Image (tube, rainbow, N blue to C red):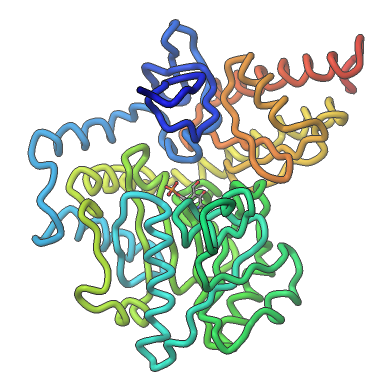
Length: 406
Ligand code: PLP
């Protein structure tokens, strides 16, 4: 017999799902079971970066599905070798390990950071400094890294080796470094934490600190990477490079795919047998990953993301000015935008949903906008109109007969 739940009695009730089911999608549009059409400004939490049913991705997956699904990591996989060399050519990295999710990419990053110091005879250096508000996934190690009480509760002793410092307190990081510190782990733009970004200056300072103290800089670009901020990876804007980087979400465009990228110095510390995965880098995932890169690395793609971001932020600034009683700040980078709300963020998400616009709540009372990077002008205008209507209704409900400020 299933566990009682409001929906889907056989599903573990760990999600608070909205009672809508989508049956089809195209670009930024989704169609629900009842035929109603929604605009998707959440992209499955930054996954559908190329929108729904992108023809190039559909073709790549279909062709691969007709040829070969899985062989295992016991044999060479040419498509994986190709994707890895394209990723290393485009980034700081010299080696790539493929995973099926973001948290597995992080797990690989944790292990690599520890193993790097171990291989240099300093196995006692295994701790990572992390930041308040961080989110790195839901395995035992990742919830320890994220440090959020609500995710740790009830799961026994916290995995050892993570020291959290406040966000935006430059002195705190240095003070937290000890003999056992292996590195610093951060999201250049915190997603779940409320679209809070590290400034270029802060990233450069942390890179310099790592160099000075022999620490590894480990970046989690699972949400902010792969073009989301208008750069291939968010850290590029600061002109720095990490030692290790976890990516996922957009690299698979909806197909489960993640990767952990590392410099040669780090990769050398991971000999045969030190890590593995049954599915990681399987032919289906590799076909889609290569297809995503075809689009994202295409000339002009990232310029277009930056232009879209500018336009969308202009629209949103107008909404913030029109509804100062609801929105106090627009934050984020590229098409990773947060509306810091003055009323509960879930009210805004719900009101937008009633206008058939999908948005996502984040920490710090923020509403996340993560539209597909391929958002058209028409889709952007419609999305902004829907958000305007939702905010208009909320403003009216808060102050009857209120007229939005000009
Ligand atoms: N890191 C960040 C920054 C994320 O946003 C997420 C997921 O939202 C993860 C890690 C975990 O990724 P996954 O859910 O694919 O395991």
